[in-house]
Image (cartoon, rainbow, N blue to C red):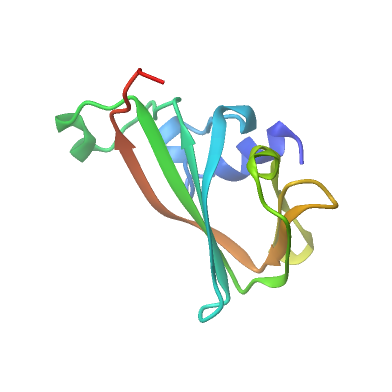
Length: 136
Protein backbone atom coordinates (compact mmCIF):
# COMPACT_ATOMS: atom_id res chain seq x y z
CA UNK A 1 0.00 0.00 0.00
CA UNK A 2 1.18 3.44 -0.75
CA UNK A 3 0.86 6.39 1.56
CA UNK A 4 -2.17 7.62 -0.39
CA UNK A 5 -4.13 4.40 0.30
CA UNK A 6 -3.26 4.64 4.03
CA UNK A 7 -4.55 8.21 4.08
CA UNK A 8 -7.64 7.28 2.05
CA UNK A 9 -8.59 4.47 4.44
CA UNK A 10 -7.92 6.46 7.62
CA UNK A 11 -9.31 9.68 6.13
CA UNK A 12 -12.78 8.16 5.94
CA UNK A 13 -15.28 9.89 8.29
CA UNK A 14 -15.81 6.61 10.16
CA UNK A 15 -12.09 6.52 10.97
CA UNK A 16 -10.03 9.70 11.52
CA UNK A 17 -11.64 11.83 8.81
CA UNK A 18 -13.70 14.09 11.06
CA UNK A 19 -10.73 14.78 13.34
CA UNK A 20 -8.40 15.65 10.47
CA UNK A 21 -10.76 17.13 7.92
CA UNK A 22 -10.30 14.10 5.67
CA UNK A 23 -6.47 14.24 5.70
CA UNK A 24 -5.28 11.75 8.28
CA UNK A 25 -1.61 11.50 9.33
CA UNK A 26 0.71 10.07 6.69
CA UNK A 27 2.18 6.60 7.07
CA UNK A 28 5.59 8.00 8.01
CA UNK A 29 4.02 10.27 10.67
CA UNK A 30 2.70 7.31 12.69
CA UNK A 31 4.50 4.96 15.05
CA UNK A 32 3.15 1.51 15.87
CA UNK A 33 3.40 0.94 19.62
CA UNK A 34 0.77 -1.69 20.47
CA UNK A 35 -0.37 -5.05 19.09
CA UNK A 36 -2.87 -7.30 20.87
CA UNK A 37 -4.18 -10.53 19.36
CA UNK A 38 -7.35 -11.86 21.02
CA UNK A 39 -8.11 -15.43 20.02
CA UNK A 40 -11.43 -15.36 21.94
CA UNK A 41 -12.86 -12.67 19.67
CA UNK A 42 -10.71 -13.60 16.67
CA UNK A 43 -9.49 -10.00 16.54
CA UNK A 44 -6.31 -7.95 16.52
CA UNK A 45 -6.00 -4.44 17.96
CA UNK A 46 -3.10 -2.20 16.95
CA UNK A 47 -2.20 1.18 18.39
CA UNK A 48 -0.47 4.07 16.62
CA UNK A 49 0.96 7.30 17.98
CA UNK A 50 1.61 10.55 16.11
CA UNK A 51 2.81 14.07 16.83
CA UNK A 52 0.37 15.33 14.19
CA UNK A 53 -2.58 16.20 16.39
CA UNK A 54 -6.10 16.49 14.93
CA UNK A 55 -7.09 19.69 13.12
CA UNK A 56 -10.65 19.37 14.47
CA UNK A 57 -10.26 18.07 18.03
CA UNK A 58 -13.13 16.78 20.10
CA UNK A 59 -14.63 19.35 22.47
CA UNK A 60 -13.67 17.33 25.57
CA UNK A 61 -9.98 17.63 24.61
CA UNK A 62 -10.10 21.43 24.83
CA UNK A 63 -9.62 21.40 28.59
CA UNK A 64 -6.25 19.61 28.57
CA UNK A 65 -2.86 20.41 27.07
CA UNK A 66 -1.63 17.88 24.52
CA UNK A 67 0.94 17.47 21.78
CA UNK A 68 0.46 13.79 20.84
CA UNK A 69 -2.43 11.71 19.51
CA UNK A 70 -2.87 7.96 19.65
CA UNK A 71 -5.45 5.81 17.96
CA UNK A 72 -6.31 2.13 18.00
CA UNK A 73 -7.61 0.08 15.08
CA UNK A 74 -9.60 -3.08 15.75
CA UNK A 75 -9.46 -5.79 13.07
CA UNK A 76 -12.33 -8.32 13.26
CA UNK A 77 -12.77 -11.88 11.96
CA UNK A 78 -9.02 -12.30 11.51
CA UNK A 79 -7.76 -15.16 9.32
CA UNK A 80 -4.31 -16.30 8.29
CA UNK A 81 -2.66 -14.81 11.39
CA UNK A 82 1.11 -15.42 11.29
CA UNK A 83 3.94 -14.24 13.52
CA UNK A 84 7.50 -14.72 12.30
CA UNK A 85 9.56 -12.70 14.79
CA UNK A 86 8.98 -9.27 16.24
CA UNK A 87 11.26 -6.33 16.92
CA UNK A 88 11.85 -2.65 16.27
CA UNK A 89 12.37 -3.16 12.52
CA UNK A 90 9.01 -4.89 12.09
CA UNK A 91 7.25 -2.23 14.17
CA UNK A 92 8.53 0.50 11.81
CA UNK A 93 7.49 -1.27 8.60
CA UNK A 94 3.69 -1.58 8.55
CA UNK A 95 1.10 -1.72 5.81
CA UNK A 96 -2.69 -1.77 5.89
CA UNK A 97 -4.51 -2.17 2.58
CA UNK A 98 -7.98 -2.80 1.24
CA UNK A 99 -8.43 -6.34 -0.05
CA UNK A 100 -11.10 -7.87 -2.32
CA UNK A 101 -14.63 -8.12 -0.93
CA UNK A 102 -14.19 -5.31 1.59
CA UNK A 103 -11.57 -7.19 3.61
CA UNK A 104 -8.40 -5.63 5.00
CA UNK A 105 -4.86 -6.96 4.73
CA UNK A 106 -2.39 -6.03 7.47
CA UNK A 107 1.39 -6.52 7.50
CA UNK A 108 3.80 -5.45 10.18
CA UNK A 109 7.31 -6.24 8.99
CA UNK A 110 8.47 -7.54 5.61
CA UNK A 111 7.49 -10.73 3.79
CA UNK A 112 9.83 -12.92 5.87
CA UNK A 113 9.30 -11.52 9.36
CA UNK A 114 6.70 -9.80 11.47
CA UNK A 115 2.94 -10.17 11.79
CA UNK A 116 0.61 -10.71 8.83
CA UNK A 117 -3.14 -11.35 8.63
CA UNK A 118 -6.42 -10.69 6.82
CA UNK A 119 -9.54 -9.29 8.49
CA UNK A 120 -13.13 -8.97 7.33
CA UNK A 121 -13.31 -5.44 8.77
CA UNK A 122 -11.41 -2.71 10.55
CA UNK A 123 -12.77 0.06 12.76
CA UNK A 124 -11.46 2.88 14.91
CA UNK A 125 -11.63 1.50 18.44
CA UNK A 126 -10.23 4.32 20.57
CA UNK A 127 -8.52 7.71 20.41
CA UNK A 128 -6.62 9.69 23.00
CA UNK A 129 -4.62 12.92 23.19
CA UNK A 130 -1.88 13.48 25.77
CA UNK A 131 1.03 15.74 26.64
CA UNK A 132 4.39 14.14 25.96
CA UNK A 133 7.62 15.43 27.41
CA UNK A 134 10.18 16.97 25.06
CA UNK A 135 12.96 15.24 26.99
CA UNK A 136 14.22 12.14 25.11
